[in-house]
Image (cartoon, rainbow, N blue to C red):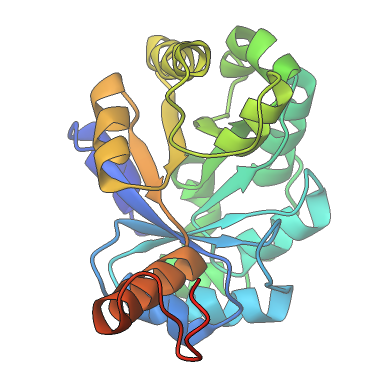
Length: 262
């Protein structure tokens, strides 16, 4: 089985940057994958993507050095196993709030004896190698999203779950759970303290820490705080931001084509 390039980069002490795909477009995923991201996550939770489209996006990403990951819509065995069989090299699972829920994710994503994953890696063995079964438990990444108050309170116990590779912060849901509004790139001291603690605890347990960000400057700060990888924006936000930038350069920041302003 091919080695998971993300694991190799992290083992070498190199932080990585992840792209985020919410648009149901294999070509958009392929285009992003060619830009130099270390990994790309196909979002089946909040993205507009179904299973069949996700498979095509995995195929598109696999033609590049970017490592294809998926965010599953929920902690459910069927979709987790199907996406791994389709060739995802890692799973990000939303709303993990307890060690029991982290254990469920591990069970769905690991072959026996560690887990209960059913064998049938139809596409995964094609792209990863004929010895997929022998090495999948070592190479596939399983990341639990910490984005609830209970998840923060149970962080230490979640990180102690054997077979879980790390945690990933969903900043908007985390902020909502802690009594603030949704958003990214938080500057409130209380939220930053929680974010810092998650990174420090993950490293203390030998686990991976990731977070979603909306700017290169904030992403670099998260690397400096100890996060192993950051996600930078989303495909739709990048598209909208660049389009807005070009239009404002052409027309000015306050004028629409119809003259009505923004």
